Length: 180
Ligand SMILES: [Zn+2]
Image (cartoon, rainbow, N blue to C red; front, side, top):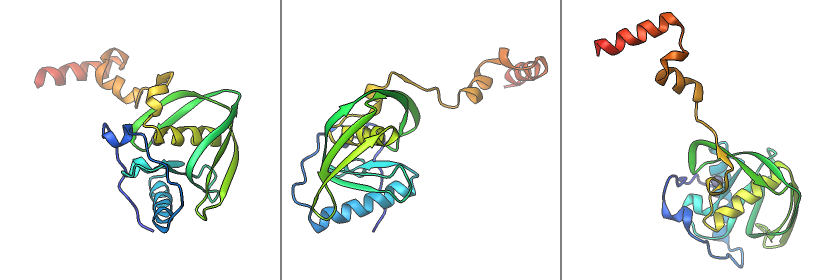
């Protein structure tokens, strides 16, 4: 296994519809292993092949440590219910936002051994599959977010809004500004 570099930002590979895999070759199997290693190294709960620059329909998901799903050509064949919750993305570092997803999904695909796999996923696991499968169609969660969370809101605020400081801190702030 080898760690791969995670693509971030406005890279067009994150906006491209990926090609189906078809048969799981040793090369695809190696890609799956590398993706698991890369995801774990980055403390992620899922990763899609375009995030490591490969435009094929492959995802890995590991919400419960040790319970890892590696799927080629994953598809959501049924979904029900609704949930709203926070998501982040290894390709959009430092941000998070609230996304509405189905509460339950059935995911079908091909496993690393080439056999068909069906996963009945609920809650956060369902959310992770939806997020990763969206990547295969060039969709990021930021496209769907109901709202984005403020990054490190408190620290930023103290820096930018002196009225939230204590009077002593405010005086020091003004003095420092004049001295500059
Ligand atoms: Zn992502």
